[in-house]
Image (cartoon, rainbow over all chains, first blue to last red; front, side, top):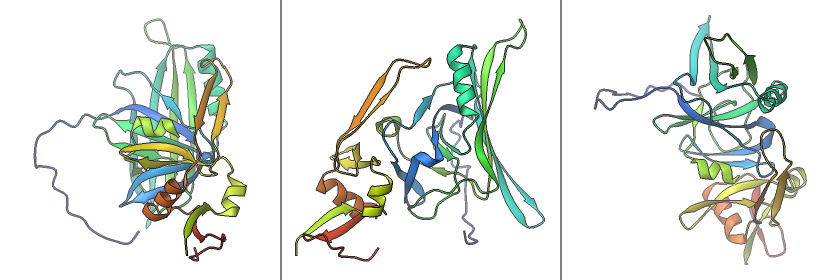
Length: 182
Length: 88
């Protein structure tokens, strides 16, 4: 993207801006055949078939987050993208989900923030409608943990969803119903 | 000459079950680009019972919407004989 500076004023009001993510939707990158971009926002996905987005509702205990950390090595910019979500308990279904998730090379997740914004992790930002490209510096993958921890703590399964890209994630205006209709 | 809208042959061959969203009235609904309904059944697993999802085939109005509003890369405008009217 070309160099442009856009002024920002975040001091217009004192509305609370709660951090964290409250739910996510995930699929394989190869399930997405085209992404529609309207004024820099994802307004549609074309999927290889129906029912490929999975909904993830994780623990609402204030631990889920999605962080993007930019860095420069000499003059080379990159963006480390890392989501963390946690599911209480350990069940056969969780172990099955973890074993299947670890084998996916490229995944895409739509993270729903507490303020309603939706960030799409897993492919490079697109300037125009077209097929998405994987995060260029490192594939976006799910790294699960299955931890019993100790009796003072909680048994849990965790997903770390990480990748490294050349750009920050785009937002989407699709609501839950639209995503799940696909 | 009358126009119609269709999915490009190479895209249809590669993604015969492709689905996307179109706006019908005020609602976004999923449609299958092939024009035929697509039904998928997910087998019962440890995560839950069997689920069947189905989306209807796209109509000419749906394809026109995708062509005109989204410049959708899979959809082309053709004359009644089926020849592409615009190079894409």
